[in-house]
Image (cartoon, rainbow, N blue to C red):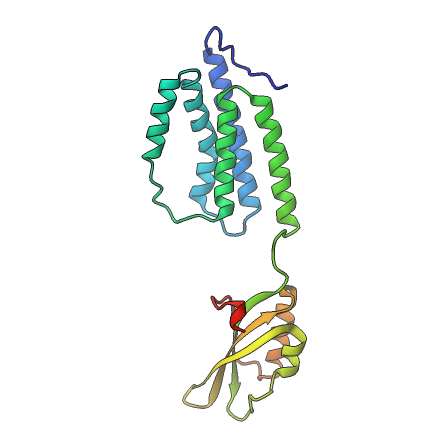
Amino acid sequence: MFTSIFDTANGISMQQGILSILIAFILGLAISITYMKTNTNYSKNFAYSLVIIPALIGVVITLVNGNSAASIAVLGAFSLIRFRSIQGTSKDLTYILFAMTLGLSTGMGYALFAILLTILVCFVLFILSYKNYGQAKSEKKELRITIPENLDYTGLFDDLFLKYTNKVDLISVKTTNLGSMYELQYHVLIKDVSQEKEMIDAIRTRNGNLTIVCGKTNFSQEAL
């Protein structure tokens, strides 16, 4: 069983309180580092928040420890909080819940439990990120290819699409550069995202090394 570092019978001492806050800050820093290392695009402000949240939650829990009336008052105060930042992803919400859990643990004095939980969860998060767990092998893309006017675009890239994509749909054809070129817009489902560069290289050798744009799109897979 995990035991609390707090001596609740005689009250929480200053040294115990400071130790709890320091542990919460260190664990929050570990969460923040894990968040930054497992995300390519992350928010600096969110990384800061992950460092602070466990300590703040821990202090609140320490202050209301054993006082049910104060606990209800704090719960009411938390219900008034409005987050005015951009809505986060489910992964961001997981990190917030993680930070709050550590704050609750340290605030109740279960420092060893909080440390072990941090090590275990951070390890799992690193493994999931390294293995790209849950990432689809195929990916939906919008592909725009510019070709010179002397090329017949009908069936021009069919063999390449057969090799690199599962599905393809020609969305539009428009002239550009005063009618001297065509721009073809496709919706494609790439078989393997690791072969995207290889596919683009194969296309540009056929379109005279003209502009090729390949990016994410909002169309649904059922639309193909």
